[in-house]
Each structure stands twice: as C-alpha cells, then as structure tokens.
Image 1 (cartoon, helix red, strand yellow):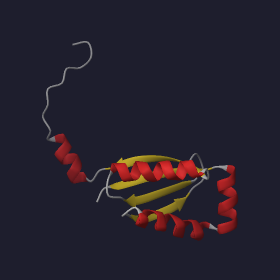
Image 2: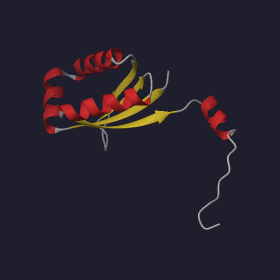
Image 3: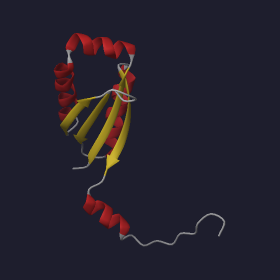
Length: 106
C-alpha cells in the first residue's frame, strides 16, 4: 500500500482543540480517520518550526490521500500538504523507464 507524508499546520481553532484534547487524543482521531479510509497511521510527530505535525500513513491510493487532505482542510482545524513517498524499489523501476524527451530549447 502506498505511503504518504502529510504535513499539517493547525489553525487557531485547531490549536484550541489540540490543547483541550491533547496530543494522544488527536493521534487517536487521526488513526481512526486513516482506518475509516482503508489505511493505517504509521507515525505522528509534533514539531517546532514551519510544520506543526508530521503524519506518516499508508493509504490505498492517491485519490484517498487527496480526499483525506480535503476533508481535514475543509473541517477548518488544520491545513495540510501531502507528499507521496516512494520505496527504493519504486525508484529503481522509475529509473528504468525509457521515454523520448526533448529538453526545452533543443
């Protein structure tokens, strides 16, 4: 199953919810969200800096990952950014793809 890195930034109301519910409460809610979409939460880390939380999840496909990102953002508690993660074997397969390509200006 594909893996995704989801970066989340809490809004003011989202931070209020985090303070009220706690980090483990949000972890449980995120785990439930992933399970309801057919996936699993592998890890959740809170951080300092530009990103408030990092979520590592397995989800069925890109459409599911996009749907989860839209649901979370539409709910108003956080904004999200999703990165599709590739295994080393997937990178090997990608590197083996041969196609005709002409760089710009050539």
